[in-house]
Image 1: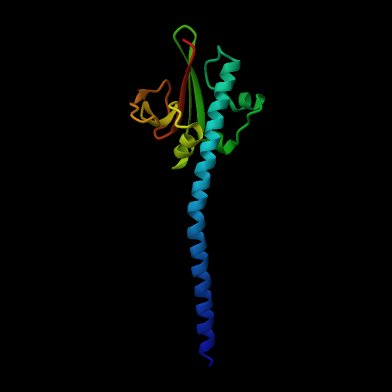
Image 2: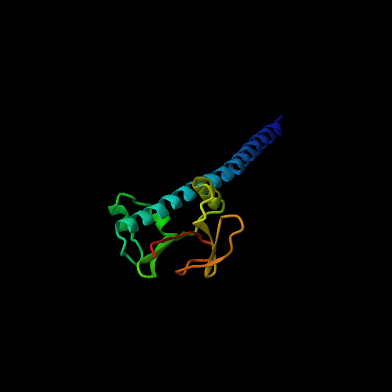
Length: 159
């Protein structure tokens, strides 16, 4: 009888540890999917906010700052902005190339494709090029340096 109590306690603790591990294993993938979804949504909003800023300031060249985005009522978290950036470069007589990019968790590009209906302006960077999510797209040269593996949005405005 006296040896039975430690066995029961051990079995109870082992069962609790097993339940905890099971719950952790089932929650983690859901958390990763949620983070990828939220990151994809935030990136689309960020790319749209940068484009809207340029629409209001057509002669702008450079990087649209967080303060400039916040001034037009589109603030973003410092956590997101730590992995994201943008560049507006000139081309032609009055054209602008708007490149927004961010290092996002795996799966975020799937959210972006879903949200934008497969908009060809979105894709992934690889070295000095990027490839659109559009089927059959070929690599295009980036107008600015972008960290390898970043999700990008590249649009051109004007000529």
